Image (spheres, one colour):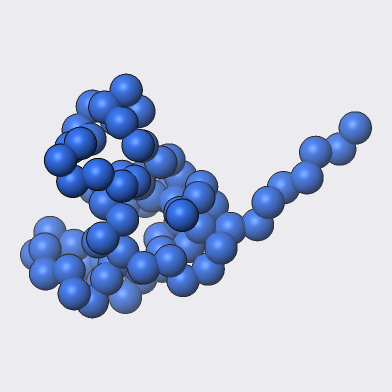
Length: 78
């Protein structure tokens, strides 16, 4: 399951021409939507997570990317 802070790459199987400029680049997940309440463009017919990434103008569904590195969990200081 993808989490905020994970590093992802667009899947090599994804042939969406809009992503051409970002192929092979590592993107950092900044937001995850799992419903229309989380993201107005979420398509419940597709299902899964819809993620937004830093410096990337599109949102990606889980089938469109591969996780290449898990994000670091920050610990709270008291």
